Image 1 (cartoon, each protein chain N blue to C red):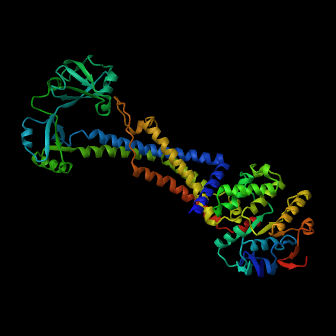
Image 2: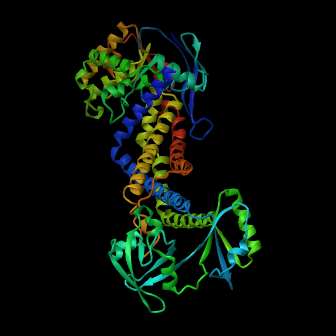
Image 3: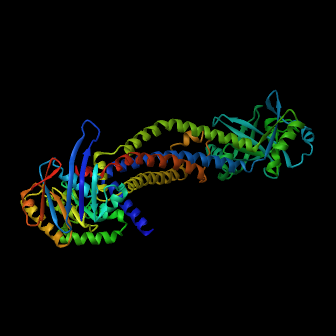
Length: 224
Length: 377
């Protein structure tokens, strides 16, 4: 489903502080599977996910999504693909403070022009699945860490994407909440979604919900 | 089209929610902005209403007034002057007028005495302006005495008080018969103060004035349009003074608005990053911020305009009245007729709504084109 060929990514290219985060990645990722990228901080896990999720473009190399080369597309087209095909769960959740859980969840649906009533109905279904209905109208800053993560998951799913990208999803959760997240993850694969996540949490990496673990170090793939 | 409309609705919804999240900051800004628009709009509405009032009041006055000049000063029209005017094409009516000023030590104010035909005011009686009647406590059938410039005492009975509708013109006016006028001021028989000429065709007024100047080189024709222009210049000048006084406040607001509009907080930048990461386009973010700028500036403009309208036409423009209306001992009471000049309102709209909206867009453009992956780093 996703193929990476000789992917390199440099930051501050041409400047004295030039830094190569990825150094020639070749990788193929299957549909409907959960793939975990693990490795130390600075190994390039998050950078790789931003390239796959159309949040940025590689300095060189090609990214193919469902057979189409998306590495050279202009930002507008990348945004379109990102909105339709990818859902993101960020490490810090990145919810917008001052808005309710419901308002946060429907935000990715705004640029699609779907009617508000339809978006709210879809959000309520997700809240029900994630056992969050009672907190739908609460402002996100009043929610616990686990609740905030479930709001972030609901937001990632509102446009019904094929791929879920989660960056260190259990970094801010305790063991109980981390296990809950892994259970949710199994639900994703059952629904046929592809999941890509980064983690160095053994609870995630060793979980049966994860089908493939890919090790990374210094911008290269290593045996996990 | 529906999708586009729905998107705009979503953007406005989100913008309103964003504004509500920073309630105190935005309400404070809206208040100051509204106040500024209200002050500027009050000034515009007030001076425009005064100009319209002047035009309305002067609409009934003669098109040309002819004064005789001696050594550059206004002098009486001597007998036989009428004959020199002769027949001028376009002049419908010419009438010798008798009027003068009288200083009343009781009120320490000048009155205008004007003679009217005997069928309007009988000998021994007068008609007085509403302001004067109020200040001197006069009512119909009261008697009032004036000592003339020659020292003689004249007593008049008040026949009526002039309608308050004409108060702007008749504040200090006393109408009396021609006989009484001539006796009171010891005005020589056959002399007049000036001559009023009615000209039916407005295009002809200047030609008539030119012919009068030619026929009577010692005369000065005063055109109604010139009087009107003088009034308008006075109001423009007063408006200018007010604007100069307000310039400091306008400048202070401009700095405040620019600071607010052009400076994005770290929180706002972070939110833009999140919105882009979850699928908002750069254009969506810019449109959302544009709606924010428009909602604030448009609300401030409309609220300010309504406040100004109420201030000027219902509360008598209490803030500007002393400067813009001018000063007089016999101050007339009058309500301004609501007059709104579309062009002036459009100008005000342009100079209040557009700069703010533009100031909002510049920093947003810079923030919105940053890479969406910033939220992942």
